[in-house]
Amino acid sequence: DTGVSQNPRHKITKRGQNVTFRCDPISEHNRLYWYRQTLGQGPEFLTYFQNEAQLEKSRLLSDRFSAERPKGSFSTLEIQRTEQGDSAMYLCASSLETTDTQYFGPGTRLTVL
Amino acid sequence: GEDVEQSLFLSVREGDSSVINCTYTDSSSTYLYWYKQEPGAGLQLLTYIFSNMDMKQDQRLTVLLNKKDKHLSLRIADTQTGDSAIYFCAVIPGYSTLTFGKGTMLLVSP
Image (cartoon, rainbow over all chains, first blue to last red; front, side):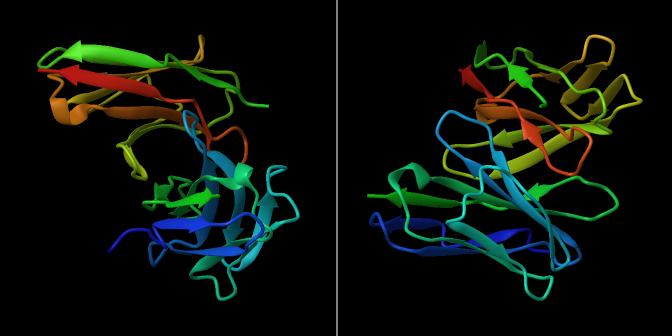
């Protein structure tokens, strides 16, 4: 078991560009979560999937954000037309449906110039 | 919505005990969690406690839960310099997503 992995670990982009992040959960976990963490704050929930179904989205997830989990395994988070305020650490977590205990990946740090 | 509060900073000497405190507003969380985050890294699950327990001990870690006061604490015995990190308290308020505090930065000096 290799744990939750995320790619890339760091991304620097210019304002207005689109970016996409990938998360691979722990293999037997059917729930996958995305969080965003800004400096000095705790992580804030963005969205989560159970298998391939996106069950909940936060108000933080503007129309420029979209997440997918097409085959119920890995997930992608895309941000279109990035803004400087999107600069943050994007964290992915996974869990079994039966426990809710979430295990986090190393995160993707996004810097929008 | 759910509110989770933590003190922002704690400084201790190596070998001392550290106690990190957390208060929360929603009592419906089945589990309550402590995560550790080192600089530039993701979150490491340290321990968790089931809501019908008062205490859980796991090696150097002791979690105390006072449901009446909605107060959770994490005690680290024999604190080491490698314990320096940010510690987050987190609860699940009635649905499956975690709500975190802002984190307590623990600084351990030799």
